[in-house]
Image 1 (cartoon, chains in turn blue, orange):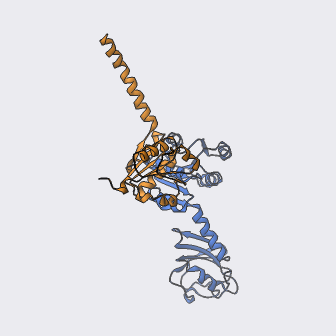
Image 2 (tube, chains in turn purple, cyan):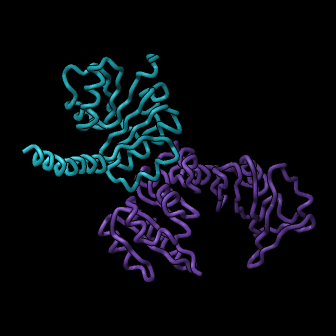
Image 3 (cartoon, chains in turn blue, cyan):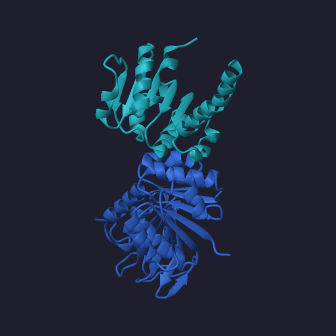
Length: 224
Length: 150
């Protein structure tokens, strides 16, 4: 059976989420209290759209909250998102609730109130900007668990000291491992005797931000 | 025994209900602080109001901290937005550990979100309904009573 997802509020976030979830085979319903947004959303094929205030229990019920597997609250108001998730949990017994929160200070409070996942757009974006600003040759960094663990994708260039070395010859710091090596279309999980070549893409998993200094050393470039 | 700490009451939302409550508590010599994000709302307070008034957004944690919510014995949340009331009441209860939290809720269907937090809710629609029922319930007995008297 298809998993049912309920999206409440949000303009462009709801739209792109709906598109991506429908593509992945979920059954998606969107609730929005702005008529224009509803019109925009209804252009998406396969998406059910309800016009109204998603913090009202009867509207959530109409949208099928009782059968929903996931409820995602995307409105611009923290209090609305809190109420949507709490109603979903307590009244409709939705197994998984996700809320976005504007004020980073309220993240812990939202978790305390029993919401399964809290996404703070500001914290997430500032983290990314910070990383992009300081290490421009790191093409992709994904922070996990609010920052302490990171997955970074870094290219190995021609003059990099690491190029041509076997993995066991590289001095790996304690908090870093190379998760996989991408070479052309191939994905390799490296072993000690794997030789790293120029042009490879390394996927790095690190704790405590150690990867920054290591990347400078390996790729032979300085962070700007 | 009432200590000063327990007598300190914070009212969130300076509408008709909030302002009148603040006036009444102030007249009864209690320590009151009223919060509203619009400072024009404080015009509803009576000239004799002797408490404090702060213009601030009560959904902001820092504003609540500044208002001294940790020290408050009672918090009454009566803004005109149910969802704001839910959030502020839960913040008061769970983050600031206020002993007594009372919130107004226009939509009785949302009451379930308060249930496990020991927050008292006041629902105008339900109260009005009870009053009207009482009046309606009384009438027939009064009528019969009068009829019997005659």
